Image (cartoon, rainbow, N blue to C red; front, side, top):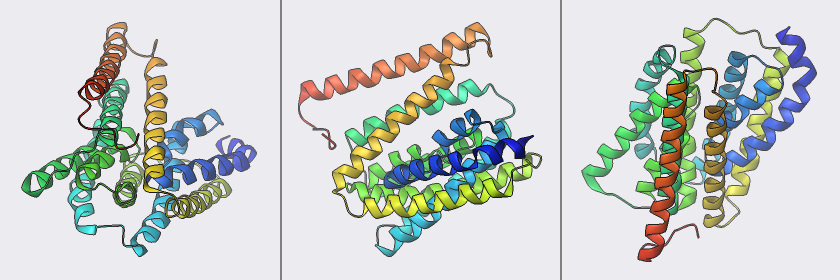
Length: 293
């Protein structure tokens, strides 16, 4: 049945993958977070959608990282500071995925998206030993969250690189390199832990090819636009991802207990309120201007 559904929707899936992969590659992120729910809507099972999303991430980010590295935008030592702890924590997150309510994972991820939005609007550099400790901790957190939700959790890497770089293109390029390693580790972890999923060969080839071409297109555009346009794209994608995850939390009504549902929605609402209040305070102080505005 799975293969029949995939055969009917293969062209639509490939087109959607190419468009979103191109857009997300500009920001240095994989498109799996948005693609997976859309794959499910198009008729794929949850596990098939997850494997395809992570598969296209790997293709998209491989070519993006190669192109960015040739431009000298990737600082591999700083990537390693985040990627190495992330890779170790991916399997832990994937294992715990089966043990806790998924809605709590989504709540945590949405709060991090809000923080990533804030940090991209108001970047702050940190140096020395503090920078290494902070980025390593964020790397471990990224790996854990990535394993937990079956995505690359790239917004967490965005937070880390926003601490280290002022140039949005460097933030994008180094995030892509980190997300590539995390996506690959997540893909392998789920491949080992979950039973094999029947995916039509044509669909798999179409998605990987679309992700690869999308990565080329996105990085080509990223290298040719002004740095602030890259920042605008990152902000737009983070906002889109926040809304996407929020809809999943709201849609969990009836799937979890009333108390857990109220706690989840209330926590995200409070996070959003805190985000808005922080923006108002920054505006009233008028000291630190939003980098993207």
